[in-house]
Image (cartoon, rainbow, N blue to C red):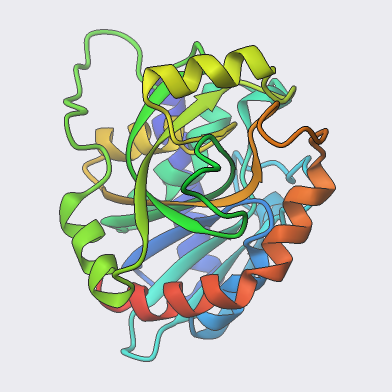
Length: 267
């Protein structure tokens, strides 16, 4: 990341503190496509700040992403930053724009990050549409990285084993899997889906991975959760569309909200 990007994240964090009247925050959550209704269950909304009111943020270009940061007070009195929307690499704004929210959260004092997404399922034999899956690892096929230069970051454990264990205490039925990230915006071809299954992927999408890398660079502990919204291309015989992704998210929002509301105070 360039010095300008660091400065911009610090400026956004300062503006966020000023807008909310809070000096620091405990945890941040980035809500993926269809996850926005689940945010309502996390706690009491203290304030909301539009992305466009903070330095470096852009309004989301994708349907299903809300475009604001909600500050939520949890039942235990913790303050969570809930990002209702994110920037994707396929929007063409560059890698720094994709990870700006994560770096702003880190600059605002957050030490724990929850990344959620809507994903295609690569294992229909064991996954049902609507299932949440904990991300245990990832494969970065975006062709991008938020870190440049000679900054070497260990990614042996990108997604915290400790946090996954805490979530399993809340819901022992949750599966774990490897998330594969493509640049998008096209969905994958059936041949690519077959390749990803061979490589050991379990879910596929167009987000999360670059944010997770930036979070680890900043020293944040990361929990990742994918919501399987459709089988991967060629696995069901049906064409893929974004409205299907959003509809599954809406239909399962209650379960996601219960999971997140129980988890946030324990992370």
